[in-house]
Length: 290
Image (cartoon, rainbow, N blue to C red; front, side, top):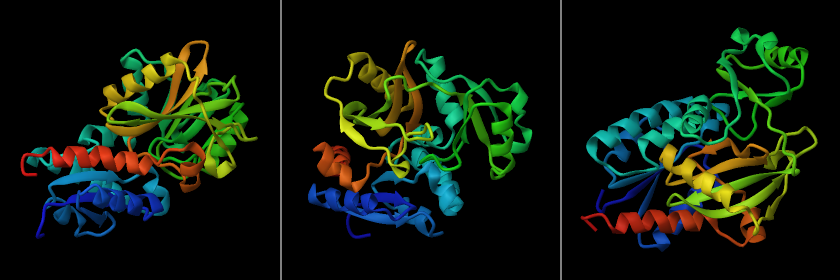
């Protein structure tokens, strides 16, 4: 490698990964896209001066479990060798373990859904759960294999067809205001706050037709909670889904690898990938060797 590089670790080959690399180059920070499905990616990454993770927990639903295994190894190895990783190794393990993230936030005094169970579908007892509840993969995302069960019968039916991976069953928090609050953090601070509508199935996701809208009057306690959560989970870049309820801002999901659909850039008036690139480039330019 002729020049120090920022290794952009990816697995889904989405537009945003390529855009992030292009934006880093525009900031004078040379970037190298590394496909974590490639067995040679770990060694190539360890030759980089800085690394950025774009390996989503949802990789497993694209058949990219190799990327998740390599990312876990690389995160630890990079930390041991002193190679900066954005986000740090600790954050990656919260990305791929929803139970760990939820319980860590709760232990820090933040409001989260109650966790009823976390096990393989065959080992979850629907009679032991409280309803309604949310059933979702403990390592996953984008509402894949996710459902709201309103009875033990519904939970039993869903679990019977679920893949043999760990699922988390947690309290369903009613979005009483009719939307979820999506908060994007950059350098640990709130950079973008939007409302995301709830679909007819009770879930909120872009793929279900949920729409985004600006949220200029978001309560300060909501953004404060997101920034506290980012500090607790060591998220330098990331996102949180929050439901504003009677108990306060309830953090129902945390993602250390954040994304936003391409058409939302124009809608929301903010280029999230550019903001990520500027934050990463600032850190790269501040390295002693640069």
